Length: 94
Image 1 (cartoon, helix red, strand yellow):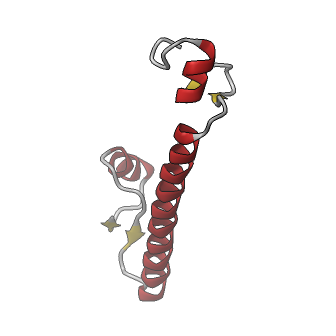
Image 2 (cartoon, one colour):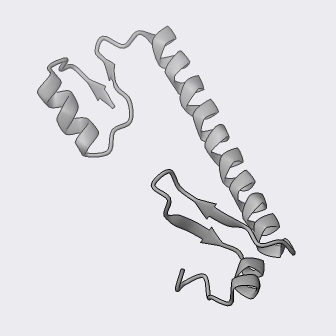
């Protein structure tokens, strides 16, 4: 987002509307270049993370061992097909 405003209310409204970063006028071209490079690196990392998650899910789904993933609140997030066979419960019911 490019803005001539620096007040917190305007910035909060912009972020609430979906902005992820801002730069103020007058534009400092060196700063803009740094931010664009950062955003490109962040997007690349996001894409790689997505690929890693797909790979991990594929491994978990095809594993012969039961794999149950539990979150920090002790709620089951994932129950692979082998766990379904071992425990006799469909993952959707768990």
